[in-house]
Image 1 (tube, rainbow, N blue to C red):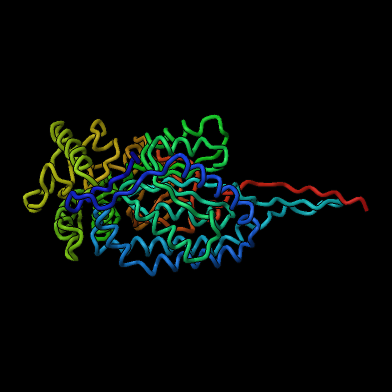
Image 2: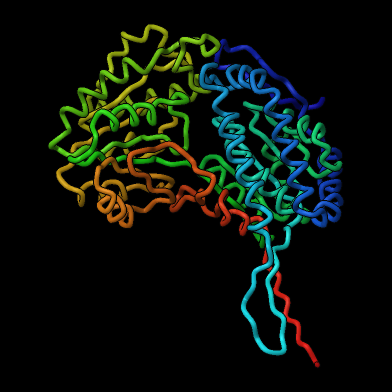
Length: 464
């Protein structure tokens, strides 16, 4: 009997999508097709690749409203927010297409009498992209479009929670006229994923997901000497200085904590507030949370906070909150105000905790849901020490009116991206990178193309 994946919708608990998993024969055929397509695609001029990939983006955007509703059913994002996913997808894709020709140009190393010398950027081959459900287009586009623009072919395995995303990509690739085999998707089991990674035809693996998942990818690639791009999540901190615009800090951090039901790798999970503004910040945060969050069916336009992805995930977050309270933390948000939030369901009220310490998991381990811990600090030095006291390092931010102080603090914080007066955002012109257990490698920006190509040196000696 053929195995299948089943996508259980967090909206109502029913099976929303069921698909057969790829067989060994289908896996082998896809890998072979991707490898053969690479020999032609890599020699296609960058301008032609850009035209086809622009059509690929356009084809997806034509389905924006249908895709938005599919996202709500598959992973619970409120319908009023779901189109933003495609807006971000478009921004990143078009930026990476626009800079590709220049970013992929040969590198000049200067004149030397009697010699011509330069470095080219060569495509790698077949790139295997393993994408998550929480931002299924925004995360996958970071690898897919640059990989294709660099002359690689792509095989996509999307999360079992969002399989329709992979199918929409394939549909768009066909409509845009991408040659057969240049972009493919497969629905795969974990065992099959390891098999694909270990295949000699696969030359790069781009994975977004958990730390344990990243370790599994590394194990599967062990001994193959291929590069891996791993984006593994975070426990991202914010620091509110005494000179911060408090109203802006509150509204930004409430959104950064609760948007997408807190299911964001770079969402805010820890907030450190200077003692001089702490009480005012707490009062404002509570009021803003009640104003911001309308928990409900994500298919209803009034809803701003949908369910988390599954009941099991909700229970893990509730356990983390309960453990912190048992250790002395205090919840700020009265869940009575959110009657849909019930144990045994994926619907959760937003929550903020004070009285937290770094001995609690709520301040140390990733919390993939609408919950944030808030601590009082007495100085920049204390805030920096606490921000660095974590195994993750994806993004971090400071709220201040002093750019010089922001840069000085940022230099001391171990993070891949440092923000001033904003959070939970990805600028495609900047390198997207994590440190520590948040991963390795880089996507987006000109730097991202360096990870998806290899340098090849040309050293030509002239005899006359």
